[in-house]
Length: 270
Image (cartoon, one colour):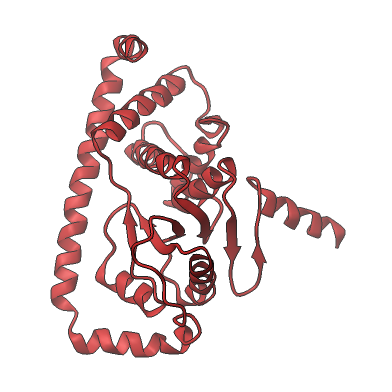
């Protein structure tokens, strides 16, 4: 507690205000997302929902054979990536692992998924969603980590090099900001701070789950960006298997960027 007070006492007021603004912005984003989900649920008729499921049926025939236990505290996690061509491969992998280990296959998300996303995942037998939420203790931890990274940035240190326990969280943040369509990452852009907050929120939330050994495997669409990439990097640290599969390839990297090192070697060999 003394260490936290000392850190808090030397944090500039602008950093404290920055954190409060980011939290409030994210709170209002949650409200907007809730309103959108509610309007979507009202506008989608049962007929249209049925048509969507019929159209996806050809992708899902192979993946709904295993009956998964619903009471298990052990998890096999997938990121929320509602693309049928991806789900037909990875839902099968996740459910097979979960079945063999008496675990539950669950899709993680920063906020509650839309009805359309739930419908698409449910076609492939994925009905469990793990929403990243903070309690008082984890909120205070995120606040502390947020102050640390802003103090780091205030010394003109590059965001892309920032790490927590050896994990390249700054790189995941950097790539996620660029993915939003930014030409570069600017510390004057509020989206940068929003992505930093979400990354820390994810890190603190999942650190507890990994430490308790509840997560047995992760099946992700990418091994970069916050969300799938950060989860993969945390899995590497806690020695949890990481699976990257798609219609063209399947791999199980054991360290960050291993997949890209393999691709570079293949390119040099040509």
